Image (cartoon, rainbow, N blue to C red; front, side, top):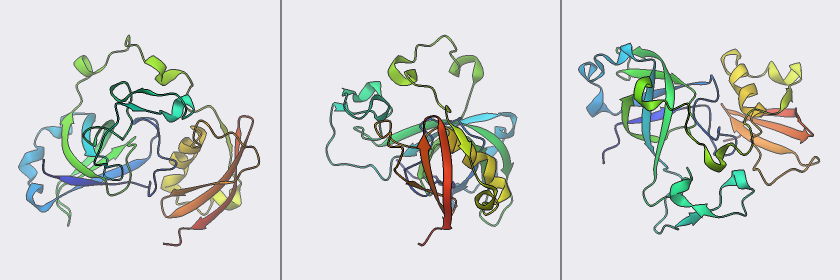
Length: 224
């Protein structure tokens, strides 16, 4: 398996990354390795609105695997079969995401670059392959979701004081609010007093959650 590219996203730490792809409008980009910077390889891709990304769980590799895992959505205490989950701790560390293809720029100093939105992928994640998304066969509205929809995504109201929001680049603001609304906390943490810190786009966002309201209480540039 060859690494063909890397994702560049605002998510510099695992905490806060959307639990699934397609839940935000945040834009990321895919930059290819020199061997694959061949414009002909992308011929026809512009006709598709969405793509599949097959990528490597590079921060979750282990020498051994477990047949069961503890999904955060179930509180971190209930074990489910690894093949019934999208846990990063798998026999092979392969992830897959369906994302919107916003734009293709074939002629940059870094070769062809794909601009995508809705990625749930850590910054600098290696990519194994991309494939076009085909709505007529890949979409199954009638499909059962198992335990994955036991709780809804995007249930929090976000209070983001203007003195903090103005420090965030304009192009990242709406996406950041979308991420916060999905409740980045682990499902088993519900403390009203705890201050959580999420790394995002070169910033550290501090927030608290009480009832269904997430309140941003600080922002600072990432130290490293």
